[in-house]
Image 1 (tube, rainbow, N blue to C red):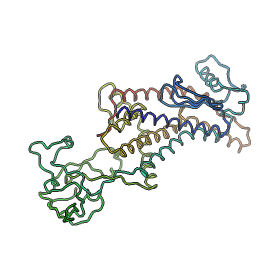
Image 2: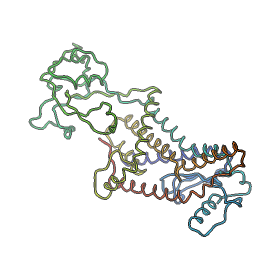
Image 3: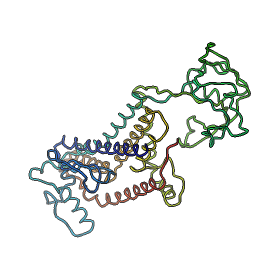
Image 4: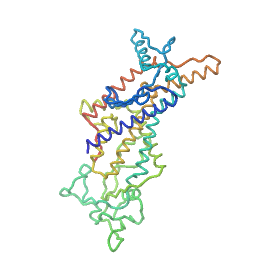
Length: 439
């Protein structure tokens, strides 16, 4: 199941990448830009087929994808296509970028180059890819929430814990000698019991009942509906509910990390509720998408500070940060772990799709960063060009011409090296010290 999950999630990632590139491709074709290549992956081509004027294919290294548009950067001043090359290291790099930009230039492509389009059209072409990832993420969230549903605890007993155990032994099959029975076991709770009233107050939802249990002190009366001729029975909880250290699930205080574990002393009953899947409405999809978008953006801003932890996880054997970054390799392994867990099929599918939706949100936000070679690195120069043209028009001056993106390529190469180095570190960490989902 682990291998099957890895393969299925890897295919989901490839489809997400292809969906991203389809956004660029569709917008480029809509604005008359010629696209000679549409590829998923990098490196040697595994398979390809030419359809119309575009060659579609899959490459050997599935770590991304690209479409190649004719004339991504403008030619040098005095040239129409840009194939000359100077000898200086940076000048040569800039000229190589210009030459590669028109590698498949054919007669008639003069007005089908990317750089000849108005800035707002170029911005749309570059934003279309990340936008497709956002659309896919929302669609996946909608499938999970509206079609499958969310496990929602109900005040009905699914399992009664036999004895009070430390959290480290919570999954023990048998009670160790001398372990105290849980209040629920001692009071005779049974699977299927629906808690109607606790300490004199009625309850129809699990969350408020949990708060009542935590705050209870002393012996209390519980009324339950039971599958017996009596129907409704009263269960006195004796002895007194036990004080136990439980995780505080309330919203964190201002400034605290949402993942920080905080504990409070609270009473403990010893029952596990049923968790039927309940379908949500469109509002829940919007709320979940907004929450995940905020968390993903927060995680991206913290990527630089995660480098020491990654280094320690790779070279020093330190425990891997469960909230740290993962690569395509790591997230595929997580997808495999989803199918490996002992869950109902629909819950596994929901977790699988939620994970894929989170990846698409990450692709959406990462590609908006205004650095080359990411999509945002092409949007920023186009936006600056539009501003320059507008200012020149208002001041009655001639058109300043396109922003020469090729001159930014040495900086882009520097960013690319940093991104690749960071990505390689994450991949190694995912191989030697992978993150594991809780059972």
